[in-house]
Structures are given as C-alpha cells and as structure tokens.
Image 1 (cartoon, rainbow, N blue to C red):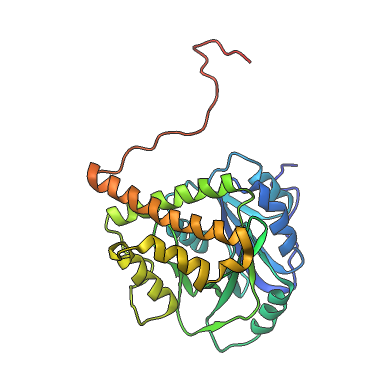
Image 2 (cartoon, helix red, strand yellow):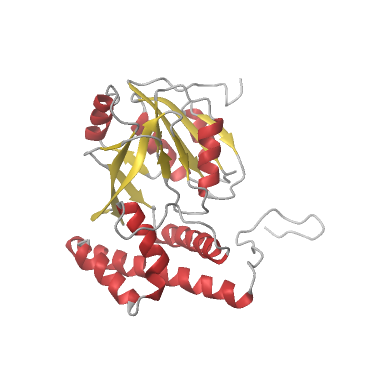
Length: 298
C-alpha cells in the first residue's frame, strides 16, 4: 500500500476545513497537525515541491496533499481554495508555524453554529525567539466555505470575503521561525517579492485608505512610508515603544531592530530594480546533485 493510501484524516468535532500552503515546513508539520487532530473536520495542504519531509509527515497524518510550483502567495492560496475538495461548512487559513489555542478552538465551535456573519477576523499573537511579544495582528482567517478569495499579490496576501465580518477574541499563536537564520532567509524572500511587486506596479492587497479599516491603513502606510523623513528611526520606535516590544526585554529590542531592517532591505532592493531597470534572473543558492561528467569526491 502506498504512503498516500496508508491513512486518512479523522474528522474532528469542528465543522472547519483547515487549508495550509507549505515549502520545507517539516520542522512544523507534526506539531501543527497534532494541534488540529480531533478538532478540524478536514485538512488540506498545497505544497510548493518541498525538498524536506513536509509531504511525508502530512501524508502520515492523513492530510489531503497536492503539490504545485509556487508563483506568489495570493495565486497559491486561490488555487488551494478553488481546487481542494472542501466540504466543511467553514474554511480556515492556517500557516504551518501557527497553533490554535484551546480557547480559540472552543470559540470557533460556538460561532460556527451562528448564521449572522460570513467571516471572522482572528487575533494572531507573535512569538519570536521563543518569547511572547505584544505584537497582535487581526486578520480574516475563518469564513464560510466558498465566500472568500485572496488578493493576487506576490506577498502579504489577505482574504476578501463577501458579507459582514465578525471578530473572534481568542488568539492564534504565531511561532515565527525555529531560528534566526531561518527567519532572515524567509524575510529575504519576502522583501524580494515585495520589491518586485512595487517595481512592476502591481496593486496592493487592499485599496490604501488613511481613515479606512486597519488593513486599509496598513496599505496606505505601505504606499507612503517611503516618503517619510527619518522613517527607519520612527519605525523602530513604533515597534519598541508603541507596540510595546520593550516589555519582552532584549528579544523585543532585537525584533524591533530587525523589523525595521526588513523595510530597509525592501527599499534597497526596489532601488536596485529601478536602477537596473529589470528584475534580475534568480541565482540558485543551494547545492544539487553531482554532475556525472566529472569525478565526485566524498
């Protein structure tokens, strides 16, 4: 019997299909799937051709897995929503490095029985270097199946839902990267995608509005941040003092500094693209198999 046929996901008590996308997330897969076991009715994974054990671990847990080459976050999420055989009444977006708290699981099961809203925003609490930070984002993560699509952007995609959106109180835990090396690699990839998106004049996830929703205000800042004098000092102080990262000690200071440097890297990459006038070809950064034409020394 093949690995794919060896097990199937055992439906849990919540009427929710959890959908994830992945690339080399083996370090998270056991934990996130154990977190969903007995709760999620269905679990789906669209893997971007990982080179680690991501797919094997997911199949071991009975997850419905498909693979698709990655072109952008919005595109990959829309493929997942439009292609996966979701039958649960509700659909939830989850990243492999996120965990549902027991309080959130209970709350979702209660609100899933209601018929007043089409979707829910969920607070997402950031953990960095193992420390709990005061950084909380409220994003739409749960919706009635078939009522959402994602903005077709290369990075920082957001779900757009038909109908009214409610608010959940309990949190998702975002366990951001197993190491600083992994975090920096991920941010390098994200900032490249954002710089290319700006260079090519692609639309933002939402219309930028200073006096709109919190996400629309973020889009407004994203568009106009680059014109603000002293922006990187302001951004550092915002993370450290306004968000309150100082309460997490040295970890909070490091996170505030690194979040600021992410924006600086993004700006420098966009400047490079504008100076060169084209998106450079991608250069491989990992080793591959041995070339049979030459001698290999072990």
